[in-house]
Structure formats: structure tokens, C-alpha cells
Amino acid sequence: MQPPDGGGARFGINSGMTGQDVFGWTRATALAAALLGLLALATLLSPSPALGQSNAPATPTSVSITRANGTLTATWPAVDGATRYHVTYTSDNTQSWTAAASPADNHSDSAITIDDVDNAKTYIVGVRAGNANDQWSGWRNSEPAGPFQSTSVSIQGPMGEKVSADLARHQSELFSLRSRRCQSRALTSLPQV
Image (cartoon, rainbow, N blue to C red):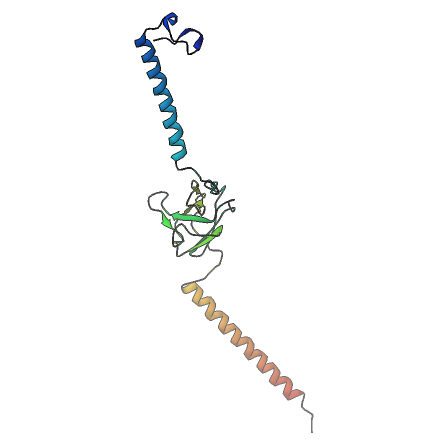
């Protein structure tokens, strides 16, 4: 079925189209118009931000972890339009993620300290940003933070006990020497009668 020559709405005896052709062409045009109307209606009814609402915030640009004894501190740059953050962490990289705040999606700062973590494990922290309209960004994960390495030195066991005992004995001897010296001075500095 071809449209009439000239593209106009010229239907008649001289157009070369039969009544059946005109009816078919009109029906195809009406169907196309109906589809365009449905598409426009679907666009209007789709869940897009309404007037006064905003889109989901951007994904946080980075997440950093600082280790301390038994804790992780995660920090990230604040995200424009974010009113809260959902923070999770894992020690086995994707098998089991744990919410770092309660409720899980309602942390308002761009930093969080997670307590009671295992110093021997490596951790990853994931953060996503949300707004008041419950729209969420994608996730940003930190680089893995390896096991906690203590910087303090503690001497334990027999060697540590021996050092402590020797120190106490030396302190006692030093005090004793000072005491004898002071007594000796006191006796020699008394006036002679």
C-alpha cells in the first residue's frame, strides 16, 4: 500500500486509490497516531521526578578506610543532594555484607566508625548516597584494608618478666645506694663537739 502522490489528503476518483486502499491507509495512519499517543501517555505516567523532586544523588567518588585496633573508620567526600548514606562492609569480598549503621540506610555523615572488627581480617566498605525521595546512587567500594598492624611493642613471657624483675631490683639497689650515701654524708657533716 503506497501513500497518495504529493503527500496531500487528496482522495478521489483521480488519486488512483480504491476505496479499500484509502481505508487501509487511513487505518494505518490512525494506528500510528494511537501508538504515538500511548507512548506519550506512558512517558507522562512513568516514575520520573515530579516538579520539586530531584534525581538520585551521584555515586560517592571514593571511600577510604583507616584501621585501628578493633575498628575501621570509613570516610568519603560528601555528595551534593545526598541526605543519607547506606554503608556496608565485608571481610570476604561479596559473600556477606553487613550494615554499618542502624537503620542501614540512614547514616547522615560522610564518615563512620565500625567497631568490633577482627584485626586479622581484610575489610572492604561500600557506600551509596540517597536523598529524601528515597532515590539512591550506585555503590562505591573502598580498596581492601589489610589486617591491623599494631605499632606498640609489648614484651611478654619469661623474657618480659625477667626484664621487669631486673628493673625493679636495679631501682631498689639504686635507692639503697642513695640512702647509704645520704646517711654517710649526714654523719660527716655533723658539727664535731
